[in-house]
Image 1 (cartoon, helix red, strand yellow):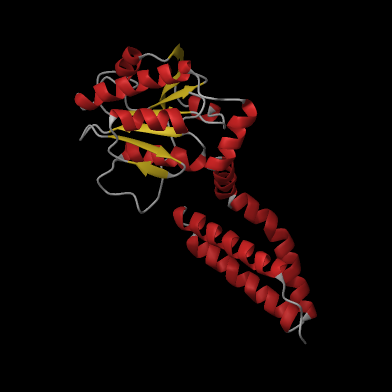
Image 2: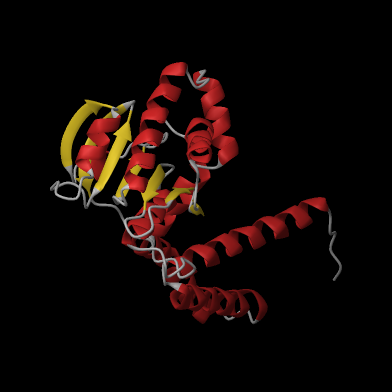
Length: 257
């Protein structure tokens, strides 16, 4: 029996394919790929039994399992779902629209504060002082701030350098900057399990990439071994940045800092 195949069907197929691709990508990064494949196989068997073979008894049993299983999947994959929703909200075009709605044009004050961060990073880079600075985006980082020590001070080059000084008790954690203030230091970040991260990058880089994957925050890293400056944003790295490149990234892609 023939059926009509129009533009809506093409769009439907493309959207389902994209949804499956992004789900596959998320499961691969979170090491849940085998579980994802098992779920897909169960769905295919369920559709084949209920729609093709029309087995009523087995089909009804599998229908009940699917209806209950949806709740179980939400609980099981809550971190992946949260990460997916964060990635939607953190998309560059969405953020541009939000900044336009808020009327955020990037004031001279923001550029001045960003320059303080740049100067601190360049100074720490010269002295091979490791640092990890997280700049909050549209999504609040209150849960991250609570893992460290509250500071709530204005952004200052000397303060940043002193916090990451090797003998400082806070130098191993991350500094969180939000609403043009240094909110906390010594914070603990989620570590990325992405297998594509070069082995030459250490734990600071993995933590920077981790926070950029689960939020729209930007993370600036100064390597203790090489002194090189990197930025993680939207789950991607920008490596070996110069002072001008770092300033440009902060001014153009920075959140509320």
